[in-house]
Amino acid sequence: MPISIVKAGRSDSAGVLDLMGQLYDIEHMAFDSSRALAALHGLLDHPERGSVFLALQHDETVGYAVVTRGYSLEFGGIFALLDELFVVPASRGAGLGGALLRAVIEDCRAAGIATLRLEVERANVQAQALYRRFGFTPHDRNLMTCRVAEIT
Image 1: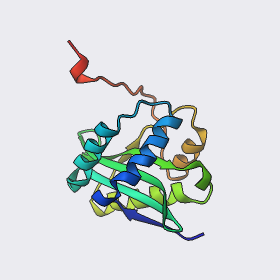
Image 2 (image 1 turned 180 degrees about the vertical axis):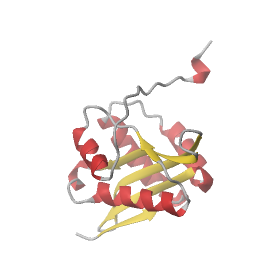
Image 3 (image 1 turned 90 degrees about the horizontal axis):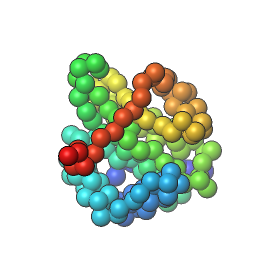
Image 4 (image 1 turned 60 degrees about the vertical axis):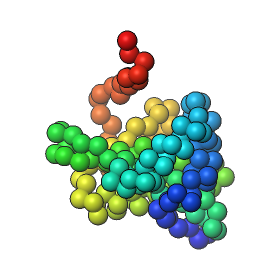
């Protein structure tokens, strides 16, 4: 089955939002489409912040990956964060996740970024297996989050 990976543009926003909604539903995360659209446009309009890749199967968008950029002394400067990677359940097992991940890695290499990080649910063993095949290793650290606006 022919697959291709392309970089998303603003014209792909509705399709990305649809996939985001599916991912967030599966992961039981709150999804605010207005907030998501604003964040997506904030990324697509500023390529220095990162990229969005789409997985196409028979010209239908069936997956996406979002990679953003940060800065870390530990990693010697700019690093990338694989923020989201999702393939619709009906299209899994066809190599789309790996193809998206390869596109992200090549994009990082082209930008001179040496380190790519990600977070993955502990229960998502299939995703962990994919990431391990690409050389990702777990860290003995806890990921912690603070919503700055909610701090008094």
